[in-house]
Length: 169
Image (cartoon, rainbow, N blue to C red; front, side, top):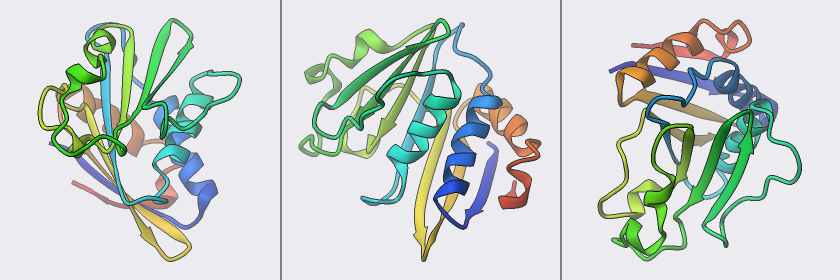
């Protein structure tokens, strides 16, 4: 398991992390990719996803799925599925959302509030936790799979991210 911690002093640093995640993205052609995002309301989860999607080539409006629960964004042969589970009642199942159809090759699931679902979500390649730190944030990224560890290894060498690097284990 690889862990990476970043101190992000402002919103532009959070956007930079999203861009770096896209630049170092290993692709989703084989089994797809899954990213969990966790943090309090306003911690920057949707902002990070928006920056990632923009850098991956998504054009047009990128709305937060707070009310729709799922927003789908195709770009460059990959389908990005942004999911926000905050409004689900605790312990809800993924069957109610029909999320299984989004699992698999060529797809990236970006799941906010994964802890609200009791079971059935695929294991994350990356788990990103965001915490407020005054005007900025601390981002803790943890790999959940070998692909996630590779992704974090690529990310840690991104020269635009190195200034924010707090810890790599």
